[in-house]
Image 1 (tube, rainbow, N blue to C red):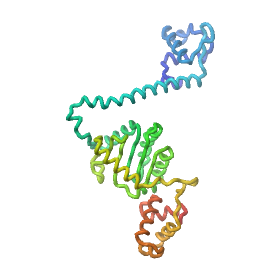
Image 2: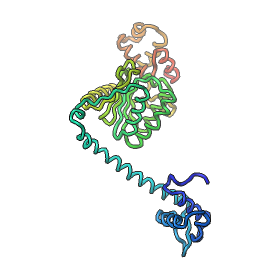
Image 3: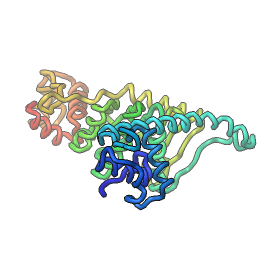
Image 4: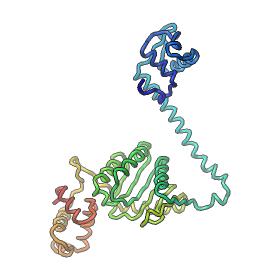
Length: 328
């Protein structure tokens, strides 16, 4: 026998009875228990339930036939999904118990700052997974990573997709240099195509994660993530982190879109084109600015903007990426 039907809510005897009538339609149920080696009462109970579920039906006195496999599986699947929906609704509604249970705590515990230190990397990752899994409304993130490994992406993809399927909003800010790493850029665009909002900042030094605007995760030391992280539920601290995120978000730019050829839609302006060409020819900003008749400050601003759009970590890489796109 191949895959069983237990995942659709049928017991082993019920499945055996259904498969029997699938192979032997319009036969009597009098001798099934003998043929299948089951107890007569167990068979009778199975037949009654299968008829109630609609996967067996009587075709005459004592005769039974099975529903078409596609119909049977669809019906059982629908019943399972309804039950799962009811269970999910019941569990979700139980969240209101948090405030009621919190009142049972001693006043000292209830008024203490709700900050937890997570010391090791595995514990931090596990907590991030839990927070993402149970997020209901929104996940905000500012992360300074330059590239994601295939393992990072494989681990994050199912959690991110699950959140987006459930309608959880994802807003994320990443550094422009992340777009210079094809697998990372590809995954960011994949998330964007599924409904996530991704923005790109010129520089990102902060590392912030906020879940449902009520729980935040930040490193103990931004310069040394090995020192652990702080899990924050204290309203005042979370509010400050939300304000920080909003500022970073507003200062960042939308993720550049791609055209049908897979290139960024944003083409350089005529001046930016000349700046790119100058970057490839001269080594000093002062010389390039003088050639273009603009200030050094303006020249450097255009260089920085172009590096961000290209997702380049440095000027040589920017020139290379610009050539690959046919900009120069």
